Image (cartoon, rainbow, N blue to C red; front, side):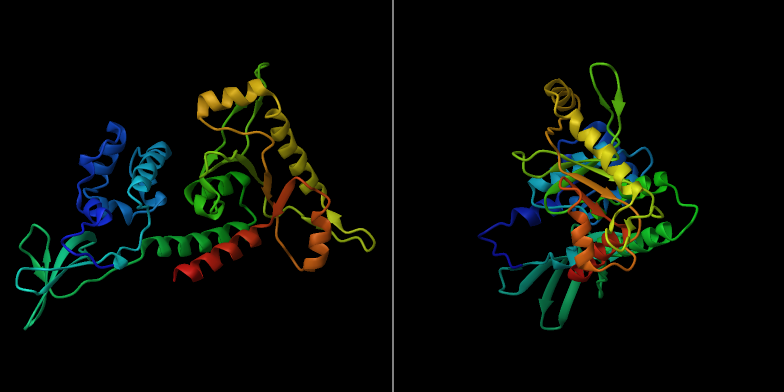
Length: 318
């Protein structure tokens, strides 16, 4: 990505800025300071999981940061090795800016070529180095997360709460290009104080679109009943679908919709319904498609589907 002095690059300029120059809430700003994060360049290499490991750092603060970065066309978990900006100085020599990892901390560096080679210097500092080591932190985190999920779904002692915790820490596994956030276990309360708690409400990027709902079930639940003449979904899947349809029915009431919108800023009506349950096993794709026709308004995914999808995503990122 090249840059001439005559034409400034706003994304580059923002990477150089200190976090405290942005209008973040006091709680979020203090949390970033506690995590030792000073610049936007350091912040964007972190993942949601990294930030949530900071003491008393909330998911609400993560959402605040993601919104701030989105305005700058930046995001968490970025590959900063691709962010290099080149200029010429007054002598005609090329001078570049790059990101380097030194002593476990990301630094912004000035790279300058001359007849004797290339010097690497910290911006605004005097220390000079001869090597830059760059890492894709988001890729490494996601690879570890895939292994963790595989361990969870193969462990007899895993509970649904363990999976809820996992997907809260790694929402990328359940989000796609349509959704920007997965809101965990929001309490839906009607006028009679009856409560429903879906595992996730999926908030779309497009403000003109409505929210959808995802439910998690146990990975050891049976998914398919392979009767010779009538293959079908299991009773466990039918129960999950019935639960999801209860959530859907909740949003048929205008007062319920308005209550959720006022309290959480989420707009839903006849949401699309998703459930993750069980394992794929050996099943013909034709038979699976035939079975899926039993539920027209609910999409059923297995945990194997989620893992396969994430592994494909990792291949594209590699």
